[in-house]
Length: 482
Image (cartoon, rainbow, N blue to C red; front, side):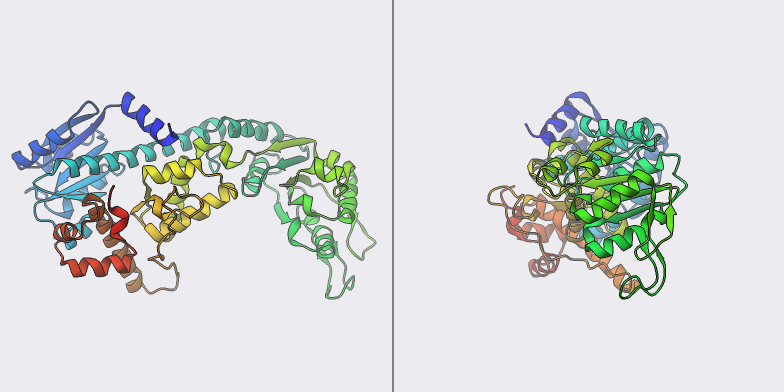
């Protein structure tokens, strides 16, 4: 059983979720209650907005299903007030006369979905299942964030993996010392995050933290970057320049990709680590520093030593306190959590509603090998936010190498271009288009890609629907057979 399905099964077997229905029409209220009432859902019905709002200070439901035709608080005002009173509770809006304009207005006001009345049992049950699943994921993310922050003190590193929690223990243990730390792990596993966490918990936290990528420089330039240089020491050296060892004096120096350095640089590094003094390139003055060293590499240094590519004495000097970061594929329990976290971060940055992942897409990314690790996952989540917005990421939107068989189509052309210089009017139009896309996505999902039924539900012609789908990168074939 996949992690997604196992987690859902556990949740459904241990929790009884409460749904609050707000509807002053007795018939449609009974229909909604009958559709949602089962062994999992406890359904409460309020016949007015006033009655519902009186309950909310004491009742925190898992889902609200609210009619936009309630006489004492009609239309989007109902959604606005509910979002103010219960900001973390998803709201499904029900409407007697659905239209494109009303659907877009409802989603913009905070509804996660819009379903027509009279209520179709299957449509309401599926919409509620999606909303509750998303709410569970949000609660899980909030819970882990709280646990990691309170129990472990790592607000910017999220995990529920036993292997990563042991790394947290190592960070706390070594941070109080000045010991040299060697962080080992594949590209993208978060080595710089770990180095910063060590620095922030050390006595040097108020002093500089300097990071340098040793693999980004030639040998000559790297020596200048590390140790500084004197005026005229080489072509282009127009004046004295301090190196990163001096800049980090009293603080911490993070040397990333140390395994890429030449043997000559390694000799000089060993001398500095042993004596904490050096000369600038082209200089005679001895510079003394008090700098804590944290090094990192994705190279297997023991093999590099055996091959003669890395000095054995430097390896022993660096390997005082090794910290090994597991690749993302070895901590699959963190993938759903990190995905939701990165989606929220990117959505907030771009001002776009975060997308959700279909169960099939979530299972696919949990099973993927992730050669680029956490960095690759973050980049993909950013892409999904731009392409999918508040809609659902399906297996067809996964990159070809992680999609399930037969689902290797790449994502559609991004709908939104992120540009800080775009005028406000254009930004508003872009946001409106994103909400329209989300609404049409929900309708296509509900009607399994049937264009005539979708157009009728949206209150638009089939030609208008086709044009909008083309503009928003939606394909009816992606919704058929679901």
